[in-house]
Image 1 (spheres, helix red, strand yellow):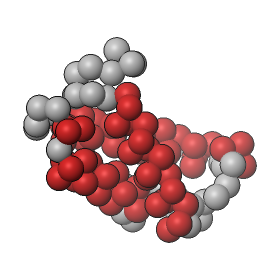
Image 2 (cartoon, rainbow, N blue to C red):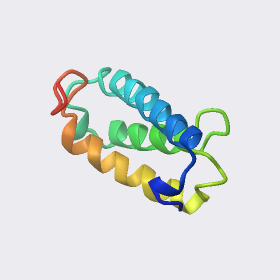
Image 3 (cartoon, rainbow, N blue to C red):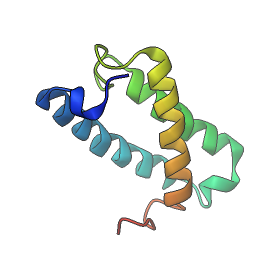
Image 4 (cartoon, rainbow, N blue to C red):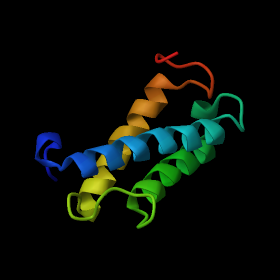
Length: 95
């Protein structure tokens, strides 16, 4: 996995766009149910959404900078972050 500073400006901008788009999709998904963190099936859906989005050739991370193992690791870290910071689609630390 390349360090952030080792990525081209284009790759960094692409990753920023991916992050914005993905968080919007995650908010939609967690907004479909009350207390999404209490339901194992909803957690699995969010986890899968994150991995699939990051791994997808159209929407995902640059393949020249991130291996499939990197994507798996980053997807799990992102899920943990979302789990802690987004109790629902509206409430989050960034509001």
